[in-house]
Length: 136
Length: 125
Length: 285
Image (cartoon, rainbow over all chains, first blue to last red; front, side, top):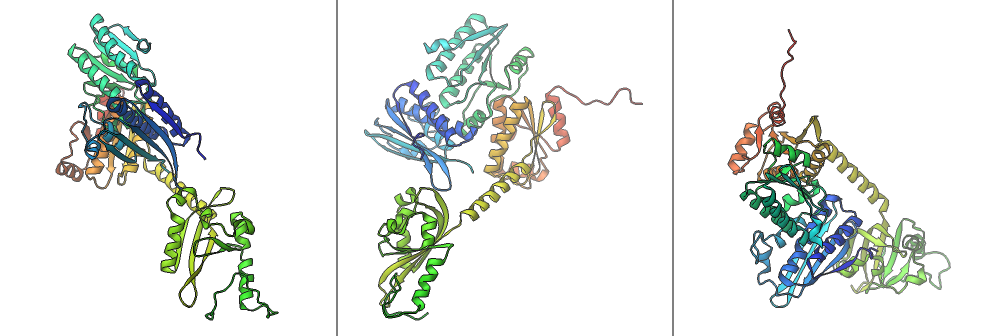
């Protein structure tokens, strides 16, 4: 149904973060998200895409529309085959970052979205999935 | 070259920079470099960033602004961000972006008033 | 009804009975009920028989659907979640299963359905079939959703007015408790108004807020931070003694926010922030 919204973006260079942001903005607007929620989703995508550049060098973002009969939503999956995060649960908590700095990549994105799942294996890579549902 | 897409305009003793709607990281980095160079050249009193076109303010962008503001402050100037969009402000609050040493203004005009009147108003933190 | 020794067959016509008997009348009833789609499924969920109302509601002709799995009536995401099989299992265990949810027609369109699945067992307790009765409740659902939406709209309009009380000053009189959803709305509407009107001061009056807890205070602080990012200031008014006490006991720090006990005092503060003052007319006797 929403085949046109489905999208994949390769994240390799810093300018790909802008490409990812634009794809997410278009997708979220097409799914009927309001301006504030669209801004939240785009900002979360920006944080997660930058995580890939910073920690894994290269990865992809897949944008997927959600529909469960009563609600419409958006799902973004960020996959990389980088070094992985040893303690992903800790990384998702407030104020933790392996690169110092703000440490708000994962926790920040989590605050802006409704749901976040993250899996990581050292030496194999990281997959982070975030979802947001449209407010009725 | 994306670095050239940042223009720093000097109006009396104020430096004015208009940020594009969706700047990439190199533009944001260039902002810091050029702002510092201009501060040095012109001995400006303030740096005003017009962010009314900016649609996404993520932690990298915020950190760069905050760092720049701290540097400007060390050089005796102040930094004012003007015209933040409501959706961006809500997101920034939720994300908890710390904007140290950064003042805020509704519009560039008000930011200029703040500088000429030596008034402090609307601080981000 | 009498207990039958043999399971009833979908086709009720018996060879040696010329007049309609109970079973035949039942078949007539099944075929003529218009509002309920009645479907008989085998124990695996394949369609055995199909009433005219089922064809009308779901769109498949009898010969298209006989032998097909009843999972075809469910949306894709439910099939992936194994919902059809789970419902059959539940009906098999408990004798009956009832659900309300989205179902799919042949043409792919959805309707909101009430579904009852009943396990049909013979005298020995062996599961012979499932009876499935489906009713289209789309109209009711639509009406309910519409009312819900209207109620929500009324709530949004009625509870958070943003008033331009003076040039450069907007007022938000808060009434009732502040949950996250309402704070979101408040923030968005207030910020939009501040930006659109270019008002440097926002007065938030909490006289009508019955009680304040840590979370409400947190929501208020967030709103204040967001307003400041725009370049405007917030004055919090209507802080009654009991609320001031609670805030201190909760350890909530509102020291960075200008707070005033009355709305009048708050408005005066807002005026001062704009370098305005209200003075009596000079020519008054």
